[in-house]
Length: 395
Image (cartoon, rainbow, N blue to C red; front, side, top):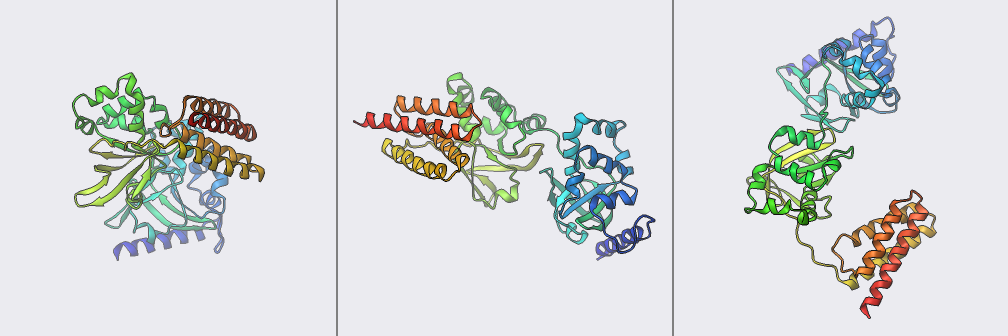
């Protein structure tokens, strides 16, 4: 009750302040950017939005909720930080920081105090806490609430909040408990993929988890002849997208980048991925999220798809692709063929050497062109060639 009164009072004061401002008239409602500019205490924020080319976004339809740092909040940053961020070369970094202050939707103060976190336009989450009548967002104190704008709401905070700036490998390295995992990623040349802009979720085995494997297993997997197997094991720990713990537990299962699914469950003793227990959750990285597990996940061994089943799969793919192409959807056709050829080359299909050659040549030609029509035909020829090769091998 005390918290509610405090917030109602703060909201009333903010409304009175705006209505009595010489630049705002009672009853006027501006968008988020114009409201901030007219308030007069967000000059640095406005300059930053302009430098990051985000003014158009926050003048859009929305609605948005902005946790807006005042000029005084920006002045708390180390000397030279703001000037550095406003440089053209820092545009991406500045944009990520500003987006970290914005949440999609209009979230009022009454709603804010009922949640523990919120996903920002940056993709990362901010932590929200309410204690003793004070609300904080990632440690920044909320000092004014519910400034209503035509396209959302502004809540004023007294400090600039900063998202994680380190990617998944850098975050894992800093933690100090993933030396084996990072060594394996380096050996299989997966560090670059884990460092990209595409958001990923990694169920990361700690060094203790790798130590639980039978003696000599890690050393054997790191040998050049076993790196393909090691790569598939690592990909079995990675899911596309930024999946936080409560989202993961609602999924039951998820498809990994290795093409095989993992089982997610919550039962007596904790939360599990297959039979590996989750020991730490929601470790933020600039390009994803890390969940720590206590055992290495081993992908299930696949049974080879029979040659007859493979032939039927090719027939089905060609039939669907032809229909798409003839309907004028060359992009969709090329995408379908590419996915099919990649699947055929995954190692799960019984392919004669000549069929494998046709498919490999086709996918290489397709990757070398940006024309969807050319890609479609290159892949179609590969599928046709593989099918003919399989027909010959059966005779």
